[in-house]
Length: 175
Image (cartoon, rainbow, N blue to C red):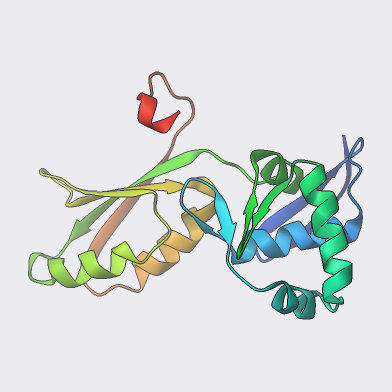
């Protein structure tokens, strides 16, 4: 059951009825999600003072909230990073499926496109043979950001996106 939904910058915040999170903690999770970069988790590499300033909090107040979020299993913290857990993404109502993005590239611009695509939020990018040139594996939560980045690259002729509905078989590497 939902208590509220608040749409901001394309992210829907959903607070579950049984959630122990305050509105401020949800706001902190949302901000951390927007600032994160994903490897296999969403990671923030910013100083607490910078995060606190962005939220108009003291560093000490932010630290108390972060400790509660960590104790609730929503984030992992260490020196210089904060990771959002699967539970945090669920609390934010963020989809965590993956998408395959197929890119067709104008041949003379391949090398420039490859360099720019490497900077975008994709888990893996493969150069392939056939009708398309690249296949990018992108977290669904980052798909809009990835597509916006691709759309600004000169030399990308077309894209086609496909979101995974269910996995039939995964290798051990991705477990």
